[in-house]
Length: 292
Image (cartoon, rainbow, N blue to C red):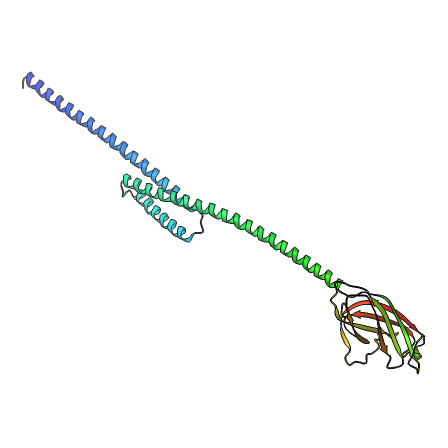
């Protein structure tokens, strides 16, 4: 082969090498571009994974007592978990993953708005309920105060309606054959005990029949017995006690003089006698009687 032939071969080889080098460079550029695209896709997948995890965390922080919303959010969390699995498995395109992620994000925003509105409504209702409870408590307090005032007033009126006795005195009486009553200080001659007093005017007392009771307690601490069977009744602050004699008067809210007589059935002993006067169940006075 002559020199021209070698030169031709060399030129041909150079051209082939140049062509191969050009193609190799072009493919390298393509590979680099594809590598960059793959790298970008990897970054996007990681970003999508991070965003989905944030969404999961956001759902965990959402608090509601609405059972319907709780069920719906649980279903959305399940979809997020499925999408996370697809991101990691790389069996979906990034564009499709983005589309699904955007849809789930918008749904979650809707739940955030709804729960926030419900929470604000609940707070408003709680404040309203608290205010209502305060009002009810105030009304109950006022009602209780009125009831107490009414009860106090009723107590005052009831106390004011009790008859008041003044000028209470008691005497031992000896009866003469003529029927004349003679005062005596001797127990052996005492046939009756007479208690007299004045009932003062009382405009708020109910007019009508009033029952007056005497309890005469002898030196031995026992009540002189009544001629009535089972003569006892309830007296305020004293319980059920026997009484010596009872009398009814017709009271018309005006001052009136009253005398009550107790007939001695058995001989009584000398000593100190205590005469207690009651109107109904209320003690209205007392007197000390000394017999020799």
